[in-house]
Length: 190
Ligand SMILES: Cc1cc2nc3c(=O)[nH]c(=O)nc-3n(C[C@H](O)[C@H](O)[C@H](O)COP(=O)(O)O)c2cc1C
View 1: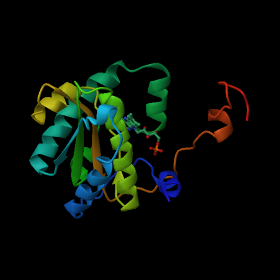
View 2 (view 1 turned 90 degrees about the vertical axis):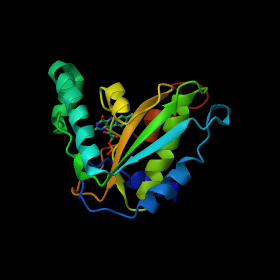
View 3 (view 1 turned 180 degrees about the vertical axis):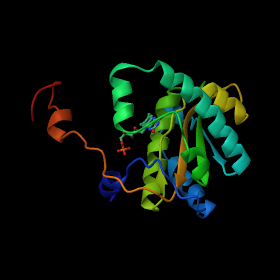
View 4 (view 1 turned 30 degrees about the vertical axis):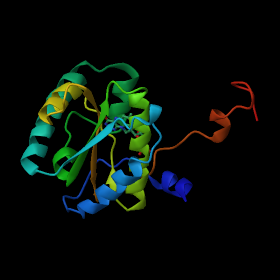
């Protein structure tokens, strides 16, 4: 059941380096490509990074962007990042056996919305197969895109490290239905 898989899925930031069968990724991308998209343009492209030297470069580029980001971040976001123990260091980019970069074709209608729906399908398919993931959005996406030889008409949306989890964590809480659903008019209680 999708609801059970959705409830079970959580972001994992520590991965075992063990490889899994790459065909699992192809199967999950096969699910992702079934997502709806504006004018059925299917504006997504997936790059699977498995070469260790390239993952090292990816981490280097992302961490340099993160250092700048963390030196400026203030307020509520800074507090939230601190409470989660997050820092500029992104070891999951070299630990996870595969990093899946997802790109959006900029000229397609509603391309970003469409690509993120495909990302959601992909995350749920991974969860169903017992593969952990994280939606990591580097602050310097253009530099990362350049490293991965992304053509100018595409935009990097997200890097998704995938692998077996090396941490046990409780899922972050979700709001209740009564907080997020209204009947007929926004704010009208059910
Ligand atoms: C659009 C988007 C961007 C995100 N960017 C990051 C990120 O850059 N780094 C990170 O560690 N987590 C990132 N996350 C993961 C969220 O922090 C996480 O989904 C949220 O805290 C809820 O936790 P859960 O996924 O374990 O349920 C992102 C999630 C989304 C949907």
